[in-house]
Length: 457
Image (cartoon, rainbow, N blue to C red; front, side, top):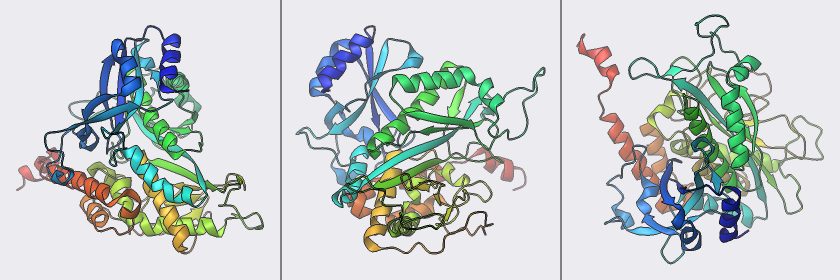
């Protein structure tokens, strides 16, 4: 279906639509938005609209860094914004009058803009496609439901002990009552996913109070999988507002309980549809191919320089602590949730690896890009992954990945592998934005400074 037919079909199905939000994922994976009235729908779907390409490069505060002079964006010049096919949908939590569509920037002559995250991912995937192999991927997202707390600190949105006003205590992992108590919210999320063609599957209460995980179906296009991921985050946050609460995808919004991850499931198939991560001749458990071993080796080799993407914010590093199923070192294992790269229980057809490093605050397009880069690097360079951690084996928690934001940025800046996949210019852009944001954060005097030092020092 072409863009014009897609618009006509949408308006036939949702005739009361009066406004359309153009959703542009930026360098952080945050949607930036223009809203246009109905009389401009047709022009947008035929020729697009103009807008400043710097929208793609804003920090999390929505501000421009002053360190991007090398891009020749002085004067904030316009570029063309156009719709992404098959992403036009209603915004269910705003009623029947507002729709949305994922949008992408291009140069005025039609060339793709190199620093659009969707195009960065497209570039990183090309080496795999050039080898005649194709990924099938899925994502999982963890988040917290929260409500207004006292002062500046939010409060977990917890169920009450029946017959009382007391918050339910304990982790309550995978408790059906946790789903029952949030059934109206979860049903609204399911309905919104159905309306917006986001393939939601399993949902369960996670390993912390007030935390949930929603999984998405495997799909054969990693770019579409990332579209689904950012759309799911938007749905969860939008529906939560509709139900009088909020949702947080911060990596570590609360002390003392687990953080929130973005897990990537990744398989590779050849031109005949055979899963090349599986070894059909092996009777070992797991029956994995040399290709999968090399892929894991490449992900281990590129993991330190990728951490600035997996953990892009100051808060990201509060998640990386022992005992929380968060990554501490570039390791791998079978059926083991304490490793960075997990080989799940699976059959030959769906043999895959689960990349568990990224926080839920990371940009899924960039996470997927560096995962694809690591896999290609490993396969082509035949990288040795080292010893696999066996199922059920207790691990030593050696912390060898960068533990602080500035260290991760330093390693990313000096990386010699990722620039071949993401592009040297984009790596320079990403480093500049993250470095500037780190400097801003480090200069802040927080409440902790006063609480720890003001009276005693």
